[in-house]
Structure formats: C-alpha cells, structure tokens
Length: 628
Image 1 (spheres, one colour):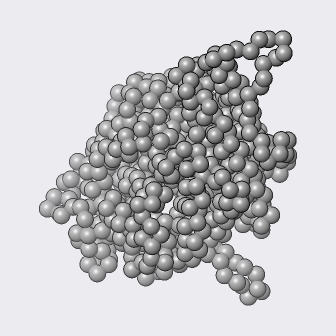
Image 2 (cartoon, rainbow, N blue to C red; image 1 turned 90 degrees about the vertical axis):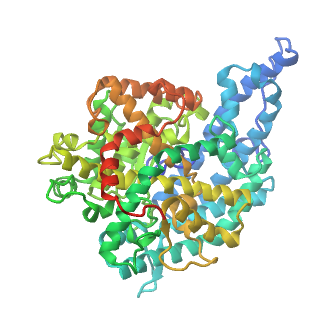
Image 3 (cartoon, rainbow, N blue to C red; image 1 turned 90 degrees about the horizontal axis):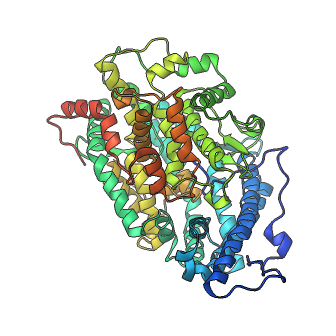
C-alpha cells in the first residue's frame, strides 16, 4: 500500500512557486482568525443571526489562512522528501509547526459557533466540522509545538535514509527500504531472509523508538488542547459517525472477509511448510514474518511463483515487456491513458515537469510512492522511484487515482479538498487496478496471449488475492495498535509486544526471532514513522471492490465481477467523476450512495469477486487445520 500524505499535502519542485507568506509573517505569532466587523453603514445584527453571519465570515477567512498554511507546509515537505538535507528538514519542521499552531488556533476560535451549528447552512457547518480534523493540533506550549514538528521530520528522514554505515572514505552510505525489500522479494534462503529482515527492523525501528515515545506525548497534548481525549479519539471521530461506532464498523467489515483470509493463510502456510520444513514453518501456528516476501508481511504477491495453483498456464506477468520496451515516463503515460479513456482530463504539463519519477542522482529521497497537489490548485505530481516491473505499474495507477481525485475537487474550499473519507482516497486508484484484467493488459500490448479457462481464472485470482486479501488484516491492525498506544492502554515498555500480539491475532504472523521491549518493529513501517493514519488502507481494500461492482453495473457489464474492466467506458467514468467531484463536501455515506446506491461500506463485493478462488482454496484445504 502506498502513501498519500496526512493532509493531502504536496509542494513545489525547482521552478515551482516561491515559499508563500504565512499567517505568522503577516499577523505575528499570536494571530487568530477573527470575523470581520460589520461595515459602518450597516446596522449590527443581533442574537443568533449575528453569530450565523460571523460564522460564515469566519469560515471564509479561515479557508484563506489554512490554504496558505497547507501550501507552505507542502512546499517545504516536497523539498524535504525529494532531497533529504538538514536545511530542508529544518524548513519542513518550521512550516509544520506553523501549520499546527495556525490550525489549532482556528479550531479553538471556532468553538464559539458550537451553540448555533444546527442553524448554519450545510456548507458552513461541514467546514467547521472538518476543521477539527484538518491536521495534527499543536500543544499549547510553543516549545512543545516546535519539538513535535522536529520529531516528526526526524522520524520521516530516519526512515527515508534507511540503514546507514560509514564507508571507506568516511562518507555515510545508506540503503533505503527499496534495497532491502528487493532482497526479501527474491531470496528463498531462510538465513538470508532473516538477516535482511533483522537488519532493517533493528536499525530503523530502534532509531525511531525514543522519537515515537515522545511524539505520542506531544501529539496527545495537542489533541487534548482542541477537545479530544487523545489522538486515537481524534482519528476515530473523523468518519461522520461516533468513534465507538466506527471502531465497531471496522470489526464488522473484518468479520465479513476473515474466512477468506483464513483459507488463503492455510494454503500459504502449508506450501511454505513443504518448502522449508517443520522447523521453519509450523503446520498449525503463525507464519514467520520474514518468509512472506514483504518486510511487514502485508502482501504476499512475491510468493506467487511458489503458490501458483496451476503450472504451465500462461502467466500474467508484464515485467519482461516493461523492462524491454518501457521507461518510467511511458509507464505513467499508460496510467494516464486509463483515466482519459473514461473521459477524464489529461494530466497538466506541470505534472511531467515537476514529478519525481526516479530517485534524484546524488541525493537521498523518500522513495515511498505518494501523490500530491502541491498548491491545492491542480499542481498535480507523484513522487516515486519507479522500477520497470508489474508492481510499480499497478502502483502508478494507484497514485494517479489520488491525482485525479485532487483534480476533480481542487476548486472547492480547501477543507473540502479531501476524500469523502480517507479510505475513499486510497480506493480510487485501486478500483482502477481491478480493471487491469489480463484482457486489458493484452489490449495494451503487455501480454502476447491470455488463457481463457478455469485454471487461468484461479491463477489470476491467486495473484490478486496475494496482494489484496493478504493485506486486509495488516491494514486493520496498524491503527488498532496505535489506537491503544495513543489512548494509553499500552505503555512504551509493551509497544513491541502489543504489535506482535496483534500481528498474531489478525494476520497469523509471528516475529522470526525473539524481540525485546527495546525493539520497535512498528517504526520499521513508513506510516508509523511518518505518523500517517493507516485505517484508510483497510477501508480502501473494502471500498475498491464495492466501487468496482457499482462501476461495472454502470458500464453494463453482466459477467463475473473478476472479469470486468471499465477501460474506455465513458458512462462508468462519468459516474466515478461525479462522486470524485464531491470531495469531502458531504458525509461519506452520501458520496458512497451517489456511486453505489448503498450507504454502508460492504465487503460482500470482495466475496463475489473471489468466489472462484475461495471455493478452490476450500477444496485444497480439506483435512487441514486452518487458523493459528
């Protein structure tokens, strides 16, 4: 799964806009949004009417200021992530602190309108609601605000650099996550896999631990200052429903898909047991994390050659063609062509001039893929270190989904410039991925032949499931862990233990070696280091299939859901675009209904899509003890 920055932040590359004037520059550090006084030639309005008029003016003024704060933070963060230097880190920390302070003051100033919220027009009322969730609030103490921002930038930079050592010439040499991930993807030697896994987790995770412990304290102080119990409460409250109801909703969705995941886990464990033996992989317990082809065991698609159901069926692997005939820009052009086939606009020329498609020569950069609208004005970009392989082709389509969402709503007030909920944003590009069927890939010239039979169907479904079904419990547990951490239910001495307890409970995955309280394996995951909420990815894993089913109906498709591609269908594209254009201007339930006719997130589309594979897995697992 790939990252979209917490506030949909994005910023300028060289040649982009200059650093904008901030609120602090214009008004001083104690600036606080204020409503304008009525003109001298007009009488003052009394009572609720006066407060309603003031609320409207407050929202208009705050939109301008928050837009400036967002852009300022976005500009410096883009520079920092595409060229990690001390100076860029300091600039990003400074603008992040200014943003937190400005947003916090605006949230506190908006409290005076609470008594008349029900009397406000829907747009004003919704902007005041969304303001509460518009960023990480700053602690009341200015020094703590500065410290919070610096720690945040340091954690991101530490992760971005990766594992560093001093070379022969005395110069620091670093290997980022891309290097270590490739070793896990390719090797099938348990000792080598363990060394790679341990090196990354020990070096990066342990370096993040003291920073994260302090970050929790400071972030919670900020959340309490604007009326939340803690960061966990703030995150869970941002879904147009009570926080307890939202937590229960995630459990309900998981209960829908857990049986399918358990069948996939059972088949995978048995295959790995045959490969490595009882000492390496138990026949009935959790799977050791380092053997699943991914640093966090969140997706298992690199094990496909070993888990392929039927050998001798033409594989769906476009990597050879990409390596031979494509470069990064051409891969992105292919992604753009899918969206334009639906009737959407081409990407602006500035996208091609300002995006980072490969790692800059001679620089350290955060290669973790992300999508940006730098100035919240259609300044679209992606940041990736693109490899010419199938995985990155799919990632490109995912990231462009964010950019097309940005493009659809960029003219709205800035607080509406986000997904209906954050899961929507992550689901857009993943919905497009589901239409990248073998027939589509053949149509685009990436596959020479496509087999059409039951065996080919099962193989293709297995390939998709190893990425999307394997991910589901991981997508759920990351924030379940952080909810417990931020709420104080789990203390620092138990951070790592609780992480592995949840990994076992939900994923059926275990640490490959004994881990200590001084380890910090959650910090070896980018989204923890960058303090990016993660439940969005679990929700997206559900929503993308729900969206796909609805779009296929709009396109008039009547066959099996797994065979549908909406490529080239303008009716489906128009329906998709209509939902995207709403941004966050309405509750997510309304946006979901706009596209699907449903007001509840529903994982039944996953079961419909994978019905052939689930039946096959149940047959393969007969007589096995599934679960862990």
